[in-house]
Length: 352
Image (cartoon, helix red, strand yellow):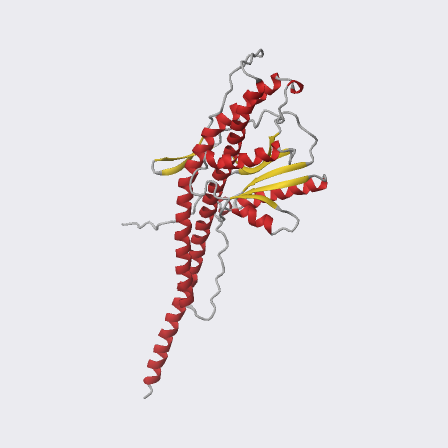
């Protein structure tokens, strides 16, 4: 006698409440006006073209950000060591013993603001953040009844300030690092303007407002005092992050390179006049600090553009999927309607 065993299907031992079901974002509602599938197809073509453009701009920005970051990392140790060494020398010299205008801070009556922005857009909130920082500083100077001279570096900052009736752009500089990494020649142009304003006593203080490059995902606008020489400069302890390619993929590695100033003996003997030494160093100091600000701003701009284009590409892909679903539904409804018309016509012909 043969016995047949009835198969039994057992349920999973885990209760339904313990299952993790990924939550998908709500679909984007696509409305079709008038043209139907033809309009949706045209919209799909437009989204595809936009996605190709944003992907290309993302790759270009990724290539530029590596060169810009290399320039920032290589210039930080020199700028830091030079600022610390200049600060050390000024501490060893009594201010009343020499006549050096950069060491004798006068009562501040007028401030020169050097604002670094980009020449182009499509870089997220890069330009907006540094412009907001500059507007806040201008409001603070106005509340303190202090005058100002505005030096705008970049087209975006210049176009913003020219739209304001209460702000006048005294100097306008563009094209710094437009297609490549900023150079010392471009920094020297700004340094000459700042030097002439301060040495002629048109301003009593010079401040730099730029975007500091922290990482590929973080950049913050800062305000630094360039003149007079009051401190030891910025303590650039973090070298930031480096964008590399390994195994054909983009990766981020931490870069710990920094400038270390060796211990200097407290007793120094000057073979030349200390004023001549400081005169030679102040030009190098101004050039290095402004060049570093240009490089930091350039690296921040291309990093922000790379992130913005990456987000735009993802949004274009999501929008394309939603439009494609709407297009398939519209096409299916049109085919179904044509089939119904054919069937209705065939049934009507059967009566004759």
